[in-house]
Amino acid sequence: MDQAILEQEAMKLPAHERALLADALLGSLDDEAKRKAEAVCAGEAEDRHDAYSRGEVQAADGPAVFENLRKRHAK
Image (cartoon, rainbow, N blue to C red; front, side, top):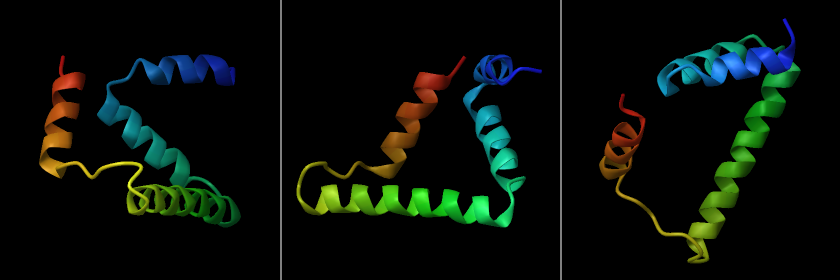
């Protein structure tokens, strides 16, 4: 199956199923690829923390964020 077709089909899944699929795909990567993916994630986390420290973004209440996500993605 073509990658574009797979991506289109995957995007039709509910958010929680896409997250499970993404986790499974990341888990299937070899060790070097895993390290690279983790480095990218760590870099993103550091960039976000730095932006927060500089006052460029504000923190959000965790439970409120999840509630908003649930409302947006509810069927």
